[in-house]
Image (cartoon, rainbow, N blue to C red; front, side, top):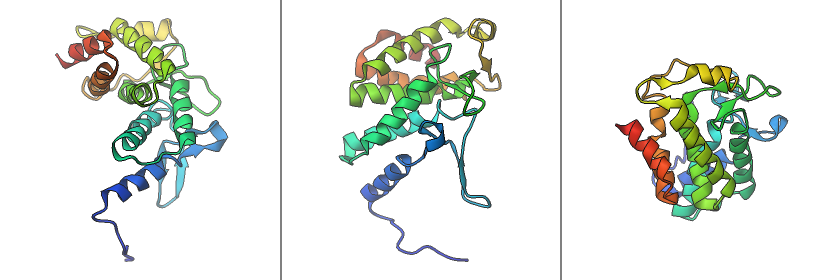
Length: 209
């Protein structure tokens, strides 16, 4: 079996730079540069679309990592990549409700809601607020927090009926509390630390309790 040579085992900065290069090169030119989600090496090398974890998931993971690397390690990040990830994140929040949504296909509307992606949505918004001073991201984050405080309650969980009837969303209901909305505690606290927006801490504390 072939083996790799000259593997980086000690240069942390170079490893971070390589990761940033990858995260800056995953955009689908046939989908307005929204990033791909799935990647496969063997047996069929490809990058592909996801109707579950596409525009609602990838931008948050990558913006959080890229902008943190820029801030803490001084690594130069391609601003065009930041803009593309930002556009994808904003797009995912442009549906009928201020939560990160997905499409069935490249031409479809934003109708798929998976609560697993709420964390990644807030990661994107937090990073853009903290590291780029984005007023748009701040407005979306505040609207999303208010929406979640209304549509999710610790006693009963989600108001699935309203999500479907009022917002015409197709929601995935197969997550536990831990794999769903509870994942958002971290970015909510970070967003609160960056903005002092009280409802962000309120929601985080409700989820944590």
